[in-house]
Image 1 (cartoon, rainbow, N blue to C red):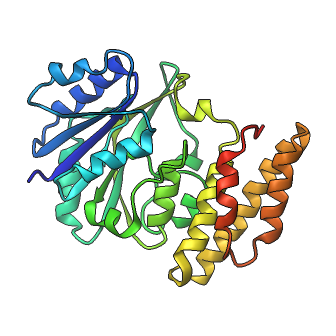
Image 2 (image 1 turned 90 degrees about the vertical axis):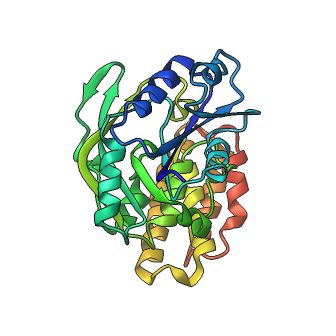
Length: 294
């Protein structure tokens, strides 16, 4: 059984996927398996199976989104530690070696990540301190934004048994939702070394395809409040309710400016109903289904 499973979901990104797979094959640590989940690509992505025959596990499935693709990889993995690589990102050659060293030195930590380099529209950018990678109890930061990038993380497989898989109903922010389910209860480790390069600015990214992304984050917070019960500490529940109020307020301001009365009314109903956060799941389907959330 390999130490790591490397799960790479892909949809119509043949050239980027080749570079991603090559960056894994160049690792200085070799005890891993690569699982490529082709999420119903209509381009030449299927040629990857032949190109890397014997080096990867390739699985083709009808198009259902990145959450379903990652979940497929998790359920077909055979390793104790799960890692992800988005098809438009690259790993540096020592990434898995550093993960192995971290795990050996910190056997009690079930989730950890590394630092990263950002490239936007072909140019390296210095991200603001708001996006600085943190370690320890990062629940408050995970409420504010997606504090862990999938390409940077290593997760012990048992965590998915406890916290569940990625939410396949979510078209975006599925990683925010996952880390929000884990970070209230787990210490997050950090390798203070830039071991991945993340690429952004291309039009097929989910952040560019879905307006009003905070509605998906509100959805995730409502689920957390309803599902976690007494496992959340009082301060955690209070912080989640406060964060939901803030994100709803931002969304409502935008909806009101654009005259979107349907979305504004939904947000009012949610905002007026949140007290301790229980009984909020009833609003979740509407947050996903509403078409115009500008």
